[in-house]
Amino acid sequence: MFQTTQPTVRIPAVQGAFGHRLFTYTTQVSPRYIETLLGHDPRSRQWKKLEPAELRATYEQLQRQTTPDRLRGIQGYIQKRFKKEAVVLGAFPAISVAVKNWIKFDSYQDEGGDRLGAGTLHLDMSRLNARIVLDGLARVSGIIELVEMASDDALPEEDRRALSTLLDDFTIPLVIFSPRQKEAPLTMREMRQLFADFNFKQASISPTMAMSFDSSDLYIEATKRLAKTSVIQSNGGMEEKAASLGKKSTALVALQNLVRFTRAAAEGDQFAEQKTNVDKDDQKRRLDEESLEEFVDGVKLFLEGMAESMGSARFRDIRTSVHTTGPGWGALGAVFHDLDVTLGRHADLYKLGQRIGEIDMRKDAPFWSDIMREREVRGNPTLTFAGGGYESRQAVRRKIHEHLGTWEALRGTTDSDEALEDRAAA
Image 1: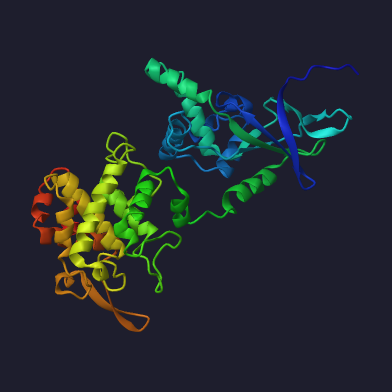
Image 2 (image 1 turned 45 degrees about the vertical axis):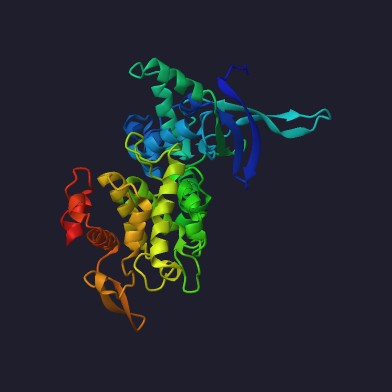
């Protein structure tokens, strides 16, 4: 029997195993060559063009389509966090790829002739040896988009050069899952199970924990800086671990509520409703790295004015006050933005805070009677907001503006939120 040359790609890798069926091979790949390694374009808009039909069916059955927003988010993450000027470092978890057939692996040997776990992988690049993305499809799709952009003549030459430099400055960690040597190919059922294990059986961390750990989100960073100011610290501080304040809590505000306040204060009421990991377009964003300190100082003055006018006992009342509720914090943030940005003619933020502090913030005060109602909670009569979270925030926002005499002026601005119309006035 004569020997023939079999075209394969040689890849340095570290070998591992899961049970009696799977080998794994861990390596790194340039973003420019991830599509070549897969042998196809895995982006969801290309699925209908995939051949053979088994490959197309595999993606359609196993994967979820990557939305345009998700693609843009991945691209933005790479461009902001991987560049040399990045304020906060960034990284990707490994991409997981299933390879249908077993792979030849030559182990390196030490001086004594013992085989090591590292070696050279001989990956068969033929169409019959299907390579399928099990985990990380959105990351792969976003990377392929950037690779295409780097050679797109429609992009200015300077931008193409910058993007090309960026693509050469990072690699993609990759884990390949394949049958053990000489074993039968992976079946559709087996690959489907791996996909389910990787994507549906993992437990996500809580939103509160995500906020607590995140140093890259400017609004979370602004919130953490605000939490360290004396006006927050001296009145109980911020609860960082729990999503809300418990009955025994002595904190002034929970992290989630203070983030919502900060987002509304920085970008306006509608931005308070966005997910915490959704950034505003750079062209429309008010808050950036350069303005962060000035923004926090302004908000601090605003809250200090409130605290001075109300007195510490009333300001830190988390049991019976409107302003320390979730809708209350959101409304205060929106009012700050309304006064400081939308109306733009109120420079003394401390005095504005003082005037808001003149309001009787107790839920049973006559001032709030038209937006509060009494209902039974666990058998006890309790005052709560008449509407849901959004409606309650808008109602508190409107009442504060009416006290300040700025409601009609705000409604007359062309750039005020649409929410100021009939829903907010109802």
